[in-house]
Image 1: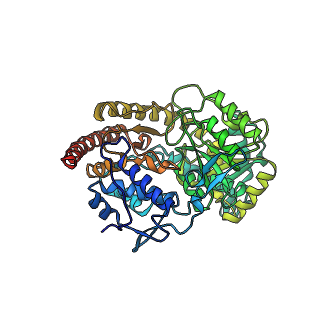
Image 2 (image 1 turned 135 degrees about the vertical axis):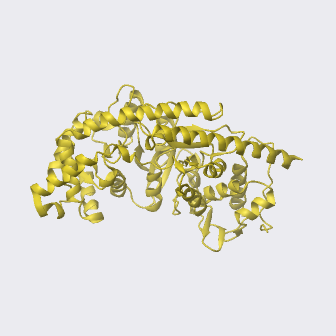
Image 3 (image 1 turned 60 degrees about the horizontal axis):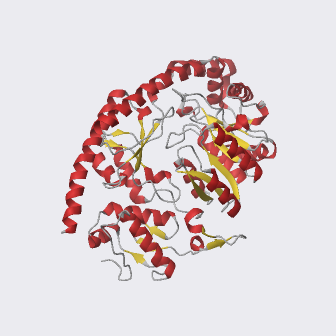
Length: 505
């Protein structure tokens, strides 16, 4: 039975989602002291039964309260009011503005996804499920024959050297090839400014470790790439989510945060943003650079999707517009060529580069030399450029299939923005029906899965959003996946309406 001190009346006529009502009321009771440190909360199933609501609503509420530092979970024991009040302490700045650090910059030592949500995501691994959730590129794009030839050529040419340690900064010919490669985007650098990494994910991690210390603040778009949220929380860095308005990070909000907080790094994905697919327009790119330079805060630019363009005019990366060497550019060849070889790179300068190289040497000594040589040969022989042209043509076909399938199979109230590139379609469900987590259970039962929007938000939100990776599947699978998703929505909506009607009787 629920703890007698937990009082959470539900207003079923309110426009506020039930899970948000739970979050608001439980948080208020913790802050007021009605729920004390160490108090055990009822299990999600118990509270759902007591309140006659969906268990998913309780799971979502508990997950966000854990992510915000209000609750802690212990395997086999239950969910408790967190023992530390650090995340609840308001911060008062010199202008007299009061901001609650718990909401925007909680230290968040817990993993991004709690156990319950991870279990939900694991359901998508069952055989026969069309899974639109992962962020991986399609394996059928990989040029297997050319990679095999490159590997064989590297071994024939360099012998046992390919299996030895490389310099932490990377294989010098590959660093030079990356320098030449990014010059086509307008990025001017030397080979000595290029650091080779084990994929773009490691590139982001190295930058964050080099620039940020424990509890330092990093501003990100909200929503943002889930991997960055995981990295920040694992390394006990603080996330400051800045609202995303369709053109990227809102700079008016960012400037307020720069005034109120000691922001040490700004993370952005300006081109084909993950998860929304948006592109930051040129004027905002220049404004962001000016703002970061004014407040002397470095920018970490994630350019991993920059080349996956199949319509629209290309815009230069932030690094190409950077006149003050304030942008650290991270990208790689994991999305556009060979994900499994794990080759990425960072472009930085001066003391930042020196710190990156030291952290890289500590992290893994060196990136595998055979993989570096294979990528370098693929670049040298123009295979990547030819591969990208073919990939982007097929990605556009798959995107168009996804849009047509969404229009045909999903309710007309579902909204999205047509992406000009990247791998993802960002959908928003109608708010009067089931949310993305509730739909997920029905979808898996119908043989389809996706990424729930909540996992991409650093400060709660995204309950009615979901991300579809259309690039990972062939057109016939995309069509079938949306057909299953539409059927799942219709079946759940009927039961959902009947259930809500019964609760009101």
